[in-house]
Amino acid sequence: MATEQHRHNDRPLVLSTKNLRKVYMIEDLEAIALRDISLDIHEGEFVSIMGPSGSGKSTLLQILGCLERPTDGKYLLDGKDLEHYSDDELAHIRNKKIGFIFQAFNLLPRLSVIDNVKLPLIYANIYEPERTRIAREMVTMVGLGERENFPTVKLSGGQKQRVAIARALVNDPKVIFADEPTGSLDSKSGAVILAFLQELHEQGHTIVMVTHESYVAAAAERIIHIKDGLIESDEWVEHRHRVKETDTIK
Figure 1 (cartoon, rainbow, N blue to C red):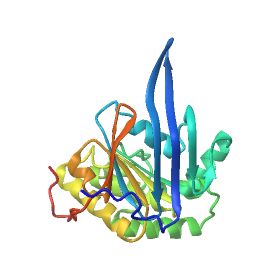
Figure 2 (figure 1 turned 180 degrees about the horizontal axis):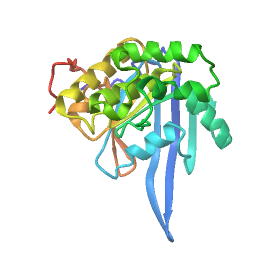
Figure 3 (figure 1 turned 30 degrees about the vertical axis):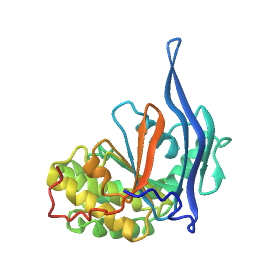
Figure 4 (figure 1 turned 135 degrees about the horizontal axis):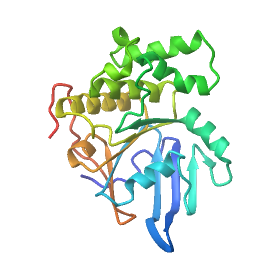
């Protein structure tokens, strides 16, 4: 690895945090999840956030994804300081600027593939038939065009994650957050998803991925290690592994 903190400084800044802290109150005790997190991520980066269980990586992703608020510190998304935004305004920002890919997929199992992908467009007040056109384009892009009317409950884990990716992309988000995206998949399906994320990155998408697995993190171009709520290291991958769909991740 090579430390090159300014590799993409010529690109627009997508998100920036300064002295971010998150404290939870458990009964009368303080539990500090994040202590002092300052980082910048520029447009077009693929960043992995690594750390053991309890390190604070998932809490950081929740704050970056506007699902939680920090206790202290600043968070700017696409140049906007989110501190004084209402919950409704944050929900609007999530829908317009953020795409989520979760370990547990978070799909509605009885809905079809295309109807799951349409959901963010409904919340964005995009009307039919434009909604169907955009959703169908995304479903086809992830290779599930022939299954667009299948209920997602009938899909494999890898197919469900591809539906989640299509849903994450449907509003053309500023940044895609992936929370342990291979965690519920077998090794072959996991390689397919990692290869797909690398392909999205090469198309220009900004991706921030949380994982506790070093081989998953190595699919990114930059790896941030978090321990005990602090950034332990922030390094660029010098010889990045290009994942192939035929690989088996270990």
